[in-house]
Length: 118
Image (tube, helix red, strand yellow):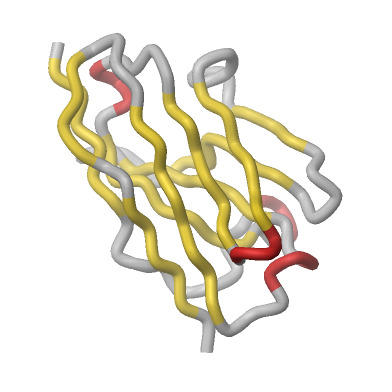
């Protein structure tokens, strides 16, 4: 059974930074492409950053140059360093495996709330 546990969210002022972490269990973590998604109130969930099993990385245009995704296969962890935060980054952030067409592979964890105050 796959379990995803996100942490690191919080309330931060615009221009600040946060580091999110997601620990995955129940899978052979190193073989999966992983991503960070976010869902703002009233909006659809969107993929903001992805890292493949061979560490190829992509970012959504909205976060490019500000967010950095990384993974530690020894710890089954994928992280998201978020810098220069803006109010539009306010959302619940969740991690998941990435399947075909960018679809999430597993049930969602609880996510972690990020709130950026302006």
